[in-house]
Image (cartoon, rainbow, N blue to C red):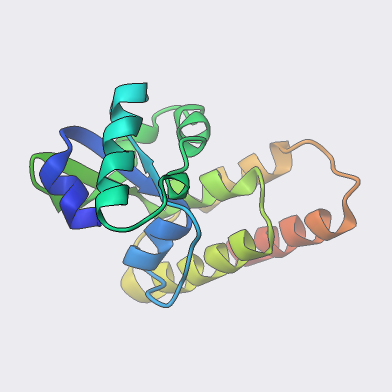
Length: 162
C-alpha cells in the first residue's frame, strides 16, 4: 500500500508508529492501523488515503489520523524525517530520535518493544539517537499512578541511558 500511496498522493507524508517500524527496522512487526500523516492534516488528505486503503482491501478504519496530532506537537519534527518512498508524493519516516519521542506519550507494552527494537537497530546500523533529548522528554512526562507504565518508562530510560 505504501508504494501505491506514494504514486497516488501528493505532497510530503510521514509514516509513524507500528507501520513505520514494520517497514523500517522490524519486518516481522504487525499493526492494526496505519499512521500516515498528510501534508496539511485536512479531511481531503484523509479521505484520499482512505480510498487508497480501501482499494487495497483494507478497512478504512485502518487509517489513524490521531498520530498527526502528536507529531505536530514536537517542535522541528519536519527536520527529523527520512525519505522512505517517492512518487507523486514523498513518504517519510521519523528518524530514530523522533520515533522514540512519539512513543513516549502512550508507551504501552508494544510501544516499549518497538523502542527496544529501534535502539538495537540503530546501534547495529549507525543511526544516531539524541539520547539526552529522549531522556529529558521522559523526565518531563507527568507523574503516573499506573505502576506498569512507570516501570515501562524506567525500562526505556535505562535502555536509552546505556
